[in-house]
Amino acid sequence: MFPLRNLLFFLIIVLPSFSWNTNNSQVTKWVIMKGGSLRVDGSTNINKFNCEITNYSNPDTINISKNPDRSALSIAGDVKLNVQNFDCHNPVMTADLRKTLKAKQYPNLIIRFLSLSKYPNLAIKQDYVKGLVSIELAGVTRRFEVDYKFLSGKEDVLDLIGTRKINFTDFNITPPRKIGGMIQTDNELSVMFALRVKVID
Image (tube, rainbow, N blue to C red; front, side, top):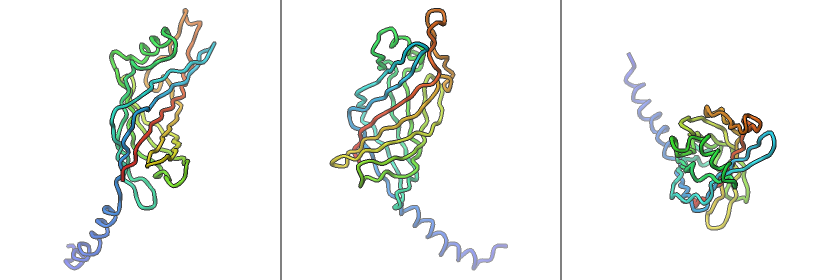
């Protein structure tokens, strides 16, 4: 049987320490501003291409719980992009990409923020952080580690630039081919998304 005095010791000494650690964390909000974008760079056996979604302007908010030592406890929020807004600067290529990504069946590409390795240092102009995101595309969701570059601006405005290489096959998509297979798209894509956020403590 658990001694009563040990139980009292646990309630009086140990529990307050848990409460102190929880209350010591701070929640910061990043409000996404207009002008965000996502760019995909790829290549075929004959040339290179890039496709973009520009002027992302949904008024989303990212919530970050952090410790005083700048370690991030958690990050929650997402960015939802309409696949039909992809522009490859070539009508045929744009139509091919939308079809390949099953835009009619799965109209949204969703990036969900999961964690950061640390909270960016806003006292310097540029900082580098790693983080985890999940990407939902064509009905499939995968987790990836992303390299972030943070650029600090005036009035608590922060530019967030995330980069990651992914494959079509990560999302059960077959890279497109044309002219009887003579033009073949490489499996690997380089993805970069850029957001401008307002930091609200």
